Length: 120
Length: 112
Image 1 (cartoon, chains in turn red, cyan):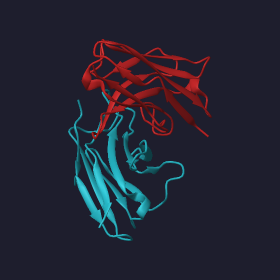
Image 2 (spheres, one colour; image 1 turned 90 degrees about the vertical axis):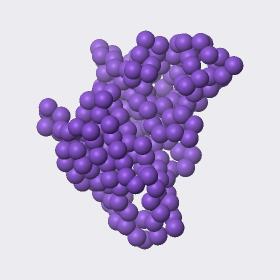
Image 3 (cartoon, one colour; image 1 turned 135 degrees about the vertical axis):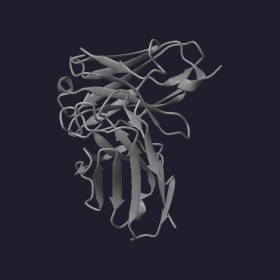
Image 4 (cartoon, helix red, strand yellow; image 1 turned 180 degrees about the vertical axis):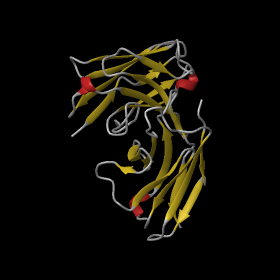
């Protein structure tokens, strides 16, 4: 079955960097777009970024544009999120999700998430 | 950006009774390809979100048939025909018609 496993979260100081990974299995990773979504403590869901199946197009939320970079390695079935210039408001659980039945920009299956804490 | 507004914020329900959640978008969610990319997600306490319904009314794999979705254009509804204890959690509507993708603020379903 489809499985998404995020990793790379941790505690980082404001202004620091972190790279998240999402290991995918159980489906043809190279055929599907992928998302990053985050959830601040006690808050709702916020879409962060999307990458097409072949990496040809990328989209970002205004809140992370210019600081975060989404990428993928289809040979390794892995999605990435490079996070630079981190701020306290980036503190959240970060989830990856794949597209599929829900459409070319939908979110079918979600990983369990990885926690990012930005604090001095 | 498309704003998604959910009501109510909280829905206390008796076990075995129905529940209904509304979601309104600030503009039509009909895509130029003819599809309406409105999804419903469930987030149980301490769990990641889970897709329940996609394209207004299609149940995702493994979702019980007590969950149903309806609506069109800008107004959508998620219904639970008979609430069970495992349905406790927060429910979100989400639009994937255009970027940036946006979510409703969430509706908390709890047992009375």
